[in-house]
Length: 110
Image (cartoon, rainbow, N blue to C red; front, side, top):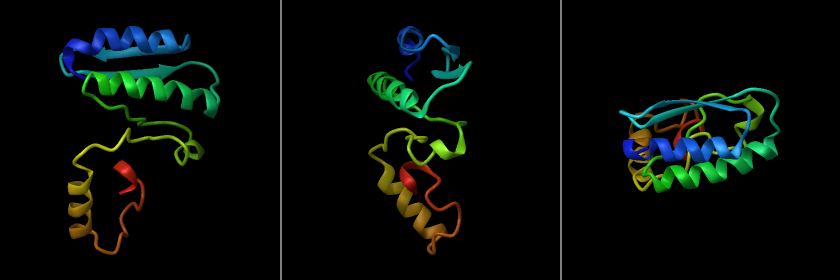
């Protein structure tokens, strides 16, 4: 996120879930969210949509570095694709033309 948007994003994110603990680095714009308790996939999908919209409004993105493995097929773990995804695909194709290395496990399914 842009550093001046970190505080407002944290207030918004905290309002969407009671069980979230946030760890923010205002200087770098990085915010970590940690959940306590049980969450359902449906609940997380709904929360992520709102958070992703708020992150994009702050010129950022939202990634999920950790979540249950079975959820990764349903959640946008690398956030929404950016305008430079085509460049990442081209670089990946040059270094891994047969698609052997971590297929589908990087940004936008690269």
